[in-house]
Image (cartoon, rainbow, N blue to C red; front, side, top):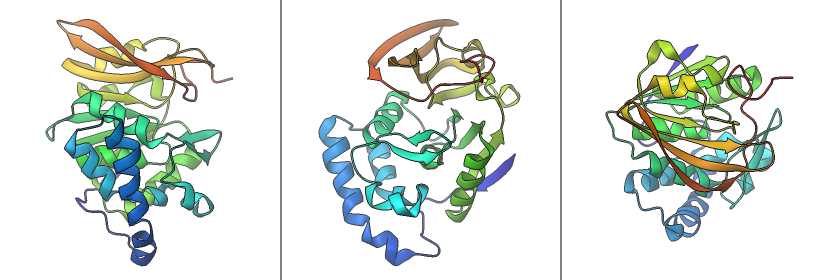
Length: 233
């Protein structure tokens, strides 16, 4: 577990010149891949304009960081396509006052975007190497409103519940009950639901203690492994 710090405009400690080289690519990504496809939430667009996405991938993959594709980050995991990330965030309708649970820290890119948008982020990752690398990048960007934990993300994080929003970057055969239990009344959750080959990005709203589902689009994420997801074997 570890707390890490907040920064409205991340500075590239150790490489401002390198970060500036990617500024044009980042603007093009937001303009052509995200805004042009219907993402209109200004807070999301501005956060993606600020955040140096290339710092969350291996240096050898940095030139592809702003391309319209997912990127391998090791451990058979990926950093999702920028448009998918933006669409998930827009559908959560996040407010600055919100507390959010993220399942699947991965590279830490989505974690950082959430930290730009809300008051507090709680993020769970099951793979130690990914968590270590994400922690180092986030620490370098000076975030203070993120708490990270190594563990079974399919269980959520009950000690910090309820959450105003939950975002899951791994596909599950069904909605894990701990997530719905930990979601605040009126809260919104987004996650991929389906089998290993085909999933649907699904928005879940909690109203009157009941689930209200909206199917957004087909997608394909890595599997959510754990007690309430796919088998870890």
